[in-house]
Image (cartoon, rainbow over all chains, first blue to last red; front, side):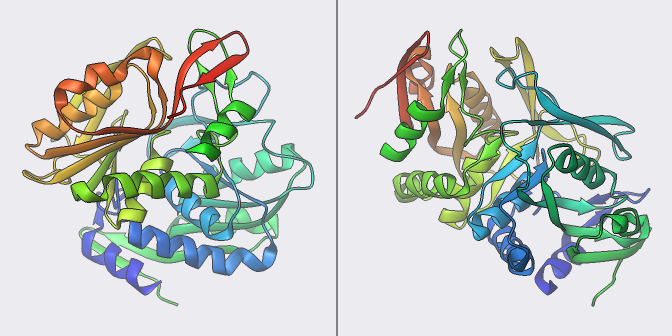
Length: 191
Length: 191
């Protein structure tokens, strides 16, 4: 998605260690027009797979997942990392290593909202190592729901998450792909 | 907003102590159609005040704030409660007591995204005691930006947040107002 690639090149900052700062439009301040377009693009790609719900992880997955789900006219569920007071104890639970945070994060989804046989599309802001998305996929499988696709706004191809996810056998689609970052340079992999 | 009131009465659960569980449509699973309508209603009310940005607090403020900002065609900023690795040290910082969590929460906004004189609309999922929203207002003032309004999806009028916010002198608008909750009963204050 050309507009997104341009924004990454213009406003993105490589902070070192593969960390990309895009908080001017994606995960602190959100450009709602751009995010609406991202949601439309993801929805257009995945609509043929007939997802019934979108699943993401809080916090920064919420905006792109919400816009994708809104365009598809289906609900979105965000997995919680900390159990809110309103969440029952009976949850689907898994965890994933966070390389940016240097710790293991918990992911919890209420059993009320994922049902056996339901078609689930996972959407997240980043596809990097793929470990958070793989954790969400484990929740889908625990619920005996059906994973139909994986979408991301930005893929860091050099972290090889796509290879990790490939055994899942579902389409993986990202809107912008970064193949390398070094010093102040961000190199896109334009299709 | 009648549709929202009906959903609260149908799906909301009073967990005791003034805690309302609405995670089937607002803050875990999100009904995107309902949330789009909520955003439109808030946008319609506040459009005359010409907000230039929407400010909210992660996590559950993101969905309604994003939909409001999208409808207004302006960016949304979500204050972070934990400093992400991509956030600089130079932030607007405040804190607010969380009664549902029983602790003090931090709220941080990058100085890059709130500018002097900018017209800011605060949107959150709940208006209860008003303390989180008041903390967001302090961030607006610290940036010398201009607060033009406060919107919430659900107001718990019995927690009197509106009174706390009244000295701010800006319009406060909520889409559904709960005046009492006891045992299994939720009583709406329909206008």
